[in-house]
Image (tube, rainbow, N blue to C red; front, top):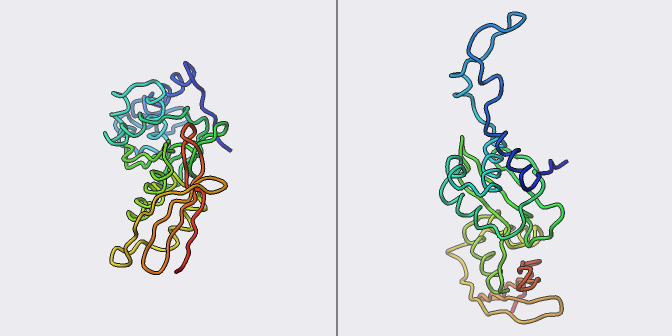
Length: 226
């Protein structure tokens, strides 16, 4: 179940609380009640930081509009990407799978299968941020997905395409020594646009839906043979 994030002042208080040391980490070394060992300040400082903690610190800094705080827990490129997010802040924390932490939308529809923000954490910093993109041209959405496929980057693909479209395209690895793909532009179809890439022996069709105001996304992929 997702943990809801609060907005406004409550969000700032929540984010600030994440930056404070826990009572245990603020206690000097010694023996506590019942003879149990109490961790020292030095030990707390060297203890591994959970990816979720790092991600939430960055998320909280973003909610407050505090770039300086964000820069302390994220790479410059991660900060720039996050602070360029055009949609309302995600309202759910979907947890972390290893070092991959996600913040998702539960009340807003955004393009792509990512549905919000994905942070890649390394140690005490977020090194990369993926986010749902607002693209205003069908051809741009198709080209963005195609570029992600060339790079072998599924998460980048999910920024602008449905999970089904990404799964279909990434079923085959892009072969740089294989056939050459030629963009053929986009044509209208009943439920959106068909943006084609031709190659010797056939073509790949990316089916794009959306609008300029809501943003375009690739909904599905199909192939035809000559």
